[in-house]
Length: 482
Image 1 (spheres, rainbow, N blue to C red):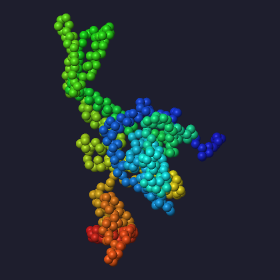
Image 2: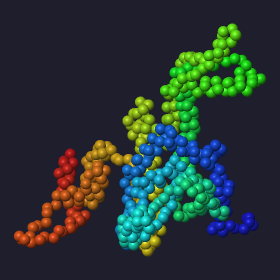
Image 3: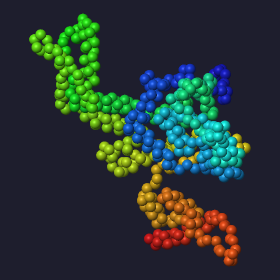
Image 4: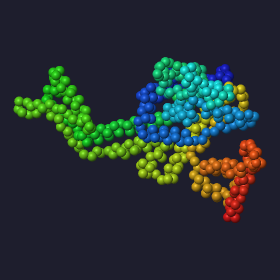
């Protein structure tokens, strides 16, 4: 048995192994993709490449149409009240939820996103000393509760370096130098919603979903540039300038060197556009031969490589890296409907995992809001997201019909819940809403009497079940006969 002292279980022995020096992370093995250089590449990829920008646009639009709800905590006496508070705070920030979500989704291409959480006391409209509305501190409510003023993005490309805990290796804050003042600021992560695509080695920068796209994007960009130059040269021809040999000599005079440089500039800048044209000297030697000549060498014929196919290949690899290659199937005229359906399901599953990440980070911040409002609970409300992809109603109807042959599906409490779910998938109103629209008006009183407006009483579960049973009685009878 070893005589080495036993390490207490509360003591940390190992380390994450994250390669960082002085707060600068050095996990990238390509030096040209480290630090600020990678940020410049990321900006170019997102803005310049139509395939990448199309994928990011599709992701953002799909996620923005997902329904978001606040679910009351279980076993909480005031769960409904706490959920209502969180719901109201979520939609009472300076930016709308849609715009806030767009900023959150920047963690996908960048690998991480930090949104600083700022609180306010809800006291209605607040004005600045000059009389203009203070959008940060104003509120739709004047109940004196504490709410969120904003979740404000701290742009990834303003990052200078991270500050780590020496013992645990955990990132505690980061330094940024943001425009327009370019004054250094320290932002604690404890004050932020910190979203990451990956937590490998506890890396606060995560890993960009576009990192695997870099290689095909790099080659595609250069082939497109070469293709453009080649097309231009095929249309215009290769310019050739014939000059006296003295201009190419190493012993040329300064005047001859200046003439050579000017001719070289003319030749390399010939373009076929609305500005085309060349002013050329007409000079002859003693023998009557032209000393300077400019001509266009015609193209040598068809090229050996089909650049369109090569670019399509790299586009496919870019889309494949994020499971979004289904967006190219219509353009490339390949792929069956079943294949597209399978790939979109995989893409929706990936989006659902990212949505779970978003909910997890936000839900960890909700108890803090409740504490600021004097609410202590072991079961706080949580933010939940709906499905990215809607169920195909035709396939669902076929499935339900097959199940309903053996067992009626719409009876009892479970049947009522199933019916509500099916109506929601089809975007149809629930029985309660439909009944409310057709409810008879309140009875009129005697002539001259004023009948006060009566608030509609909500339907009980028993009344809803009775209504469902009545609506589906005929359908159930037919199914049982079949």
